[in-house]
Length: 172
Image (tube, rainbow, N blue to C red; front, side):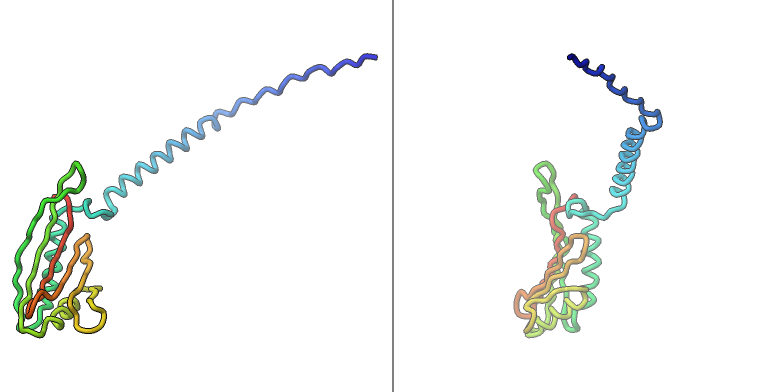
């Protein structure tokens, strides 16, 4: 007895995709690319710098001038302040790009023995300034003035306190 094998069935033919679904992925990818482009342009124009070398020496000088005004206002009576002005030093931002580091030094002079109190008075004019040592007579302070400007004050001798304002390496 012989059994005949069933006749092979034809494979079902794929149904063509409707025209609306055919263009869905390119439209979604294009919309996503456009959204990323718009957000990148907005971010480049509106976000603050996230690295020091994305700012200029002029913006650092403006911040330093503001802090010098605060420090000058906090100088105790009987003490004098000497501003040595800006000192600019060439530096390297990267292997292919040069920059400039800006420093301004203030020297506060007064009666011998009042250095610690002067350090405390100067630090009190700057919000969130950290004095050292934590307890006992103060020998110095540190303050982050924003815009990547560091303020460091320290006793440099009898009757003398130095305040250094430093920008670090930036675009000229």
